[in-house]
Length: 504
Ligand SMILES: Cc1cc2nc3c(=O)[nH]c(=O)nc-3n(C[C@H](O)[C@H](O)[C@H](O)COP(=O)(O)OP(=O)(O)OC[C@H]3O[C@@H](n4cnc5c(N)ncnc54)[C@H](O)[C@@H]3O)c2cc1C
Picture (cartoon, rainbow, N blue to C red):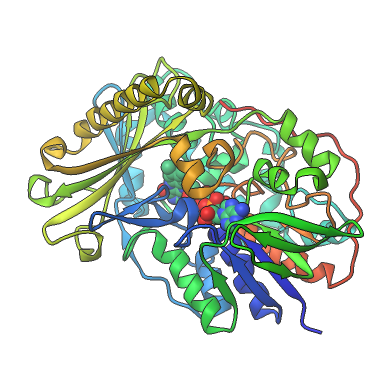
């Protein structure tokens, strides 16, 4: 009999799992709360502009990258075009460092900017190669069964062995001290790619994350949301269902297994497997009384992860320099923690993409990491103070962005701020926490298991974590786990120490 898998949420992780299970012969139903797919990697319309909600850098499309692999498995084509440089980092001392994908240009640039750091870059590239090499064979991490162990062993190659001594190291421990701008550069890059800074980022994970520009970044025609839309089109064309405006509000349990879901609009869908494209907090909330004790303990004990403050700008393109790189990171004061406007990422839409707004316009997404709690506290206790803080952050982001994009302020036709409250509303992520867990330790990485045999987590909360490429790898891994579980298999959950993560 054809197994039926229900996927809660049409983010990149959920859609990837859905498409792969559909291809493997499952009946698939994706239920999405919102009116469009993509979640944090979605693109929304507002007053004739199309804004990227969160993700703007599209990596993982080069040969053997997660998106390239998925395209090959499904036989689909992504609407992308290579962008080089990937982005430009603006350092606190006024210098800028261009992250070229082209290896020669990148080597010349890093030699110019950080002449003492060549040995670091050689090691970083070696470790990145080993990490990417393993991750191209989506492996079950952390392993939980003999089958996982076997799959993992098969993913290893002789070239992986030199990376083993670095399993417990941090990126910071590999980088020479002495040049505060080099540290600021590393911290800025790791914050956006590993959710933590060099002193805490795992060396293997961090090295792979630092390789992102070298592995190529792309413009996505129509905005990042076009990736999710491509997957939705594929799923529908192959007989799967993707239903919008269907927020799942309850999971029915039967004999200790998840049997069906109910939506706010009264839909009741029964299935053999349920894949939740949610954070552990959102899943625990959804399960209510049925949440396994281990999941309840996990969400009680975990440190909240980062949120994002965003500023979406509709721009008159005539005020913008024509030959400017599309993506910029501006690092403010390296002696203060990054985030809260002290490190700002700016992405302009592709100048050649006419779909993003009326003729003669472009759009931009500006973002910074922010702690979620203060926003909620003000939102609950002092609406005026919440709005004032929002205005202060919007100005902080605009001021930082102006240093990288001359003419930006004059170009603004429309400005829309987004706080963790906005992210919670539009992505349904608990407290608007985004980007998954800081990648401080491979041993404490979270897998897809929930404590309920036929219910899996997918998305950036599971290893390898954040980014569309990370969520795609996670989706591949969950699709494989669901197939291995079969319609009736019962997963035995072992007790293990709770992974507690720490935000930087
Ligand atoms: C500001 C910002 C900038 C970023 N920049 C980049 C970048 O440049 N490059 C990059 O690769 N990544 C970036 N990321 C990270 C990337 O966007 C995410 O890691 C990735 O998109 C997460 O995918 P996901 O599978 O976890 O799903 P999510 O994006 O979390 O989507 C989950 C989906 O499930 C739906 N949903 C939730 N609850 C329910 C429910 N109860 N019922 C039905 N549907 C539900 C939501 O509406 C949503 O559509 C950024 C993130 C942010 C916030």
